[in-house]
Image (tube, rainbow, N blue to C red; front, side, top):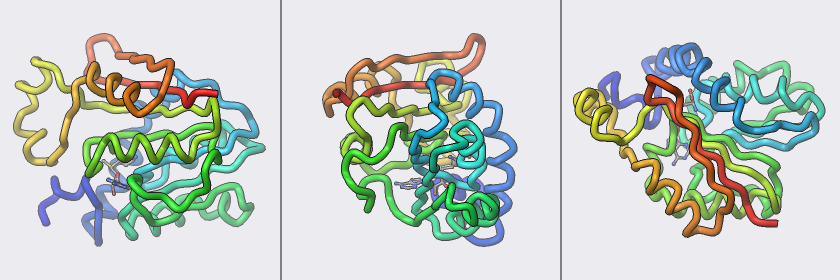
Length: 207
Ligand SMILES: C[S@@+](CC[C@H](N)C(=O)[O-])C[C@H]1O[C@@H](n2cnc3c(N)ncnc32)[C@H](O)[C@@H]1O
């Protein structure tokens, strides 16, 4: 497996070094994305495709009386995230499990917020994943997607090599909004950062 394949399902020693790098390189993007949602101190939050676990750590600080769960289909990322969040796990403030976003073991109506940073590109079915996220969200619960890649005519051309090498499947922002609405999310809002491909999309499960 080449280095660029590692973003889809980081594994082994190379996967761990990718996790370390993602924790560092995605932090500013994630913090920018999180400015678009209000987080209550007792929120129950799920981070899907949690990778190296840095976002879980950030979320646990933003919801000090709540609980943060993580899920990733790479067992090596679950191990890495568990080590990164060891103290919070000991305090029962964080729990990380192996699994796929398309079929999760969490109960219905469980989370106030689901976050997904730099991961939708790899989901086997975007609409199935969204349906599953909607199932585990409480009524009025919110989904936040945060991405540093975008499908538009400029980014797609300038970054064609990176897109090919990382096997990302980019979906235009308008289509992301349409699919979210078609599976029953409401209040979909798209935020973009000036002079950058960064984007954040928020959607809400109806009451
Ligand atoms: C590019 S990494 C991003 C990791 C982290 N969210 C971040 O921002 O640093 C993508 C992560 O999503 C996970 N992933 C991809 N597809 C998944 C799926 N269908 N279900 C669960 N995890 C998935 C990968 O294993 C990987 O850890």
